Image 1 (cartoon, rainbow over the protein chains, first blue to last red):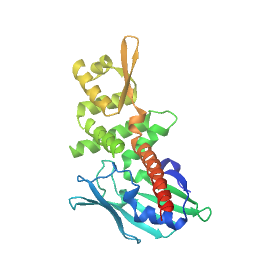
Image 2: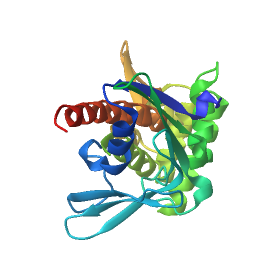
Image 3: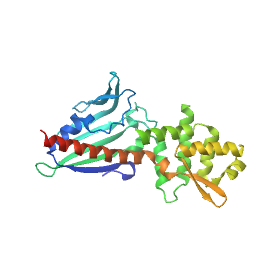
Image 4: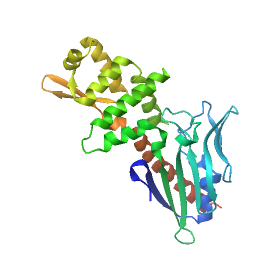
Length: 163
Length: 108
């Protein structure tokens, strides 16, 4: 399906109908999103998921500030949603869509009140050459070989350019 | 986002200094003790130690005591951050999601 070295997959079974699972995932994100995982400076007020392809996903702070961190790429209730992950390796909002990874979530009914939720976060390599070189270094049989040195140089250049 | 955010930012920051990058690259070629690094680079031993501490705190480098020598090498766990981070993040998030959905089911 997807190159597993540039994607992670996970799944969970919930005791709820597919409609409920989909509705909570997309429409009530703040109720389950790990609370410490936000880019806002201010405390979180809400998370907004615009329920349509082309919509945005953004966090709203208690001071009214907003942080858009994703774009809705596909919205097929109650079975599937795909959104971008517009967060860079430097943990900043990534403004170049070509450098964003993406998340696909599938909701598969396993009974009237039972749903399997499958999640794939893919194209992680799009976040930059640093990531790819990093993966090569870690994943190669030689372990810390040529790939790592390339990675080290790349990261060094990237960070030097930013300083 | 603690792991990914802090680790990545810290790692990038740690490599922002040329001497530290040089040390990091040297360790990419082979694990080394302070004295070896000081011999190969135009830097004093105390300065090498100081740079190694920063790299270690950023999770990029680890050290092992080998007899009288402390040998430094690159830390795979520290560098493979993003994938690990996302893997852990989504597992946590989906478990939290499950709890929430099932609560909703009980109290419609």
